[in-house]
Image (cartoon, rainbow, N blue to C red; front, side, top):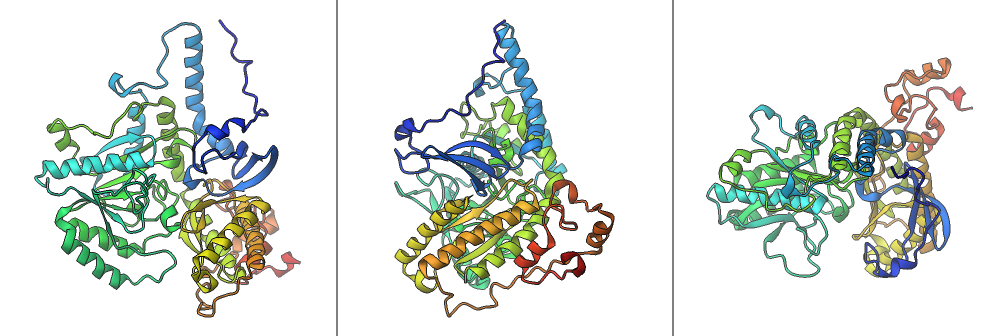
Length: 530
């Protein structure tokens, strides 16, 4: 038997020489930063042959767990692959690591589907006629959802419903070929855009409902599927829909015979902080289909999917397949095993995500204030966005672009790597097992970069800005548990295991939280602060 255990990849070896032949996220031919190592949000990045540690706080919701938690998720699949390797080397029949969709499915598919079923966003699960299509990334999952829903429309006698409605601000995958409001290469004749709230602008729900009703009056009979992101990602910098407005949009569309697909590629998997896997369930949106993706593969394996609420039997009875299928659709054994472990572990962290979402409110409202309104923040749970203001001197888009460029430079200089988005701002969506102390360290670094930017561009708070608009709405108080834990040096908080506890000073000191909250935390133990 060959000895393969001694062969290791040289992690110290790095070269950007070949990058001139790579076309990726940045300008083609550009030398790219190399991620050398990761530990939670602490990433070591090599650029221009120099290594530096960054707080990588964006990554577009692509990772959920880190360190020992990630190791635990990967362990079962790792042991499986080790056995496969041993069998391959010994020349024995080996279990598949992947199998082409024409040749069958991997055994772990059943476990994944059974585990997913417990998290579906519909209350009447016993009466559901659901099915799931598995894909590799978000855009394909959205396509698969549209595929199944449009086929159902045809089978139900609605062949005339050929159009897909997308938000006037929306992103459902790379804009070159995916549905969404951007069309950089060609006109997307199969889609039509409906009115939605806009990040950075006042939301008038009555006006929007009237506009949407007029839209449905004009186009409702043409539309087969309506796409909605309960919380926007890059297209609207993490803006959540007003909950009741989203429910009314969904209800109005369904009343017109339109099937609704909730795209939760970014905001799903509990990241929204509402205590469920899907935001659709927490808000009781009752869509006809929902997508999932991003970190379902642990940030290691590509995996995504679309689930339809009803119609599985109808598709099967008419011999219909999901046309959005391909070589690797649901074919990776390790992706499915990892996805199953992620689904099993996520509910243990729902309370922590909610808690960290409350802390993020405090941190980001503070950053709005200290930056004199340079940024406007929005979000929930562990998915937040900061939009560079369009007010004041930024009514001139060229000056706003200069500010954004300056902010990027300053964020890099202080060692923070958020997820920059085209509308002018950045998103914060770290791993969900981040500890609360690191969250405040991120806040301190962002504050440093923002203050540098304010000074560099000469930003002043616009006269029209209401000073009360950025007041913190969340009042945090240290409870009796904190005082008791300081006396006993033992914390009894249920959040202690996830390192998100603020009832003691193990992870973040109360003085740090007090500074960010601008006095809204009433510290009851003044002697402790001294």
